[in-house]
Length: 124
Length: 110
Image (cartoon, rainbow over all chains, first blue to last red):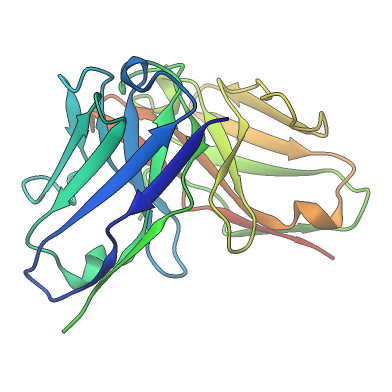
């Protein structure tokens, strides 16, 4: 059974940093791309970042480019999101999502499994 | 403002058939397949339709998807109260070099 468990969320001040983790199990982690998707309170879904199975290719939404860094440790079956220079508008539930393919880009590709989410609140 | 455009709300009565539209452009829907996700209240999203018209195992055949040009649609037939949820379309955008979602459609079963 595929399981994705996020951790590391919490309250942080504007300008601060936070690192989210996503522990994966139930599938061959290095074979699949992974992404982070967020949802601000009462709002829709927004894709944040994606990374290929090897970690060699990464993609970021313009809204987080230069501030967030996605990475993975295939030996630990864990996905990470390092978030720096946090702003109030980054407040959201952050979901870890497994891609159906090795690569993030193009199609057909889709998120076939999602974690339960981790809440990040940026406030003073 | 989302790259993909969905109606913010839709409604229907039990047993009815409804459709939710998703409009994009050549760089996203026009050149990639479309996926649909269902988000029940207070839960994580769940894959509903992938590759424009494919249902994952376990998804009832009441749900179907289609794509034509730069638009896609999700149809739900035999509407049930448990279908009340938010629905999102999504695809890859070659110009933005990233994934894009629609703004979401809140479905109410009257």
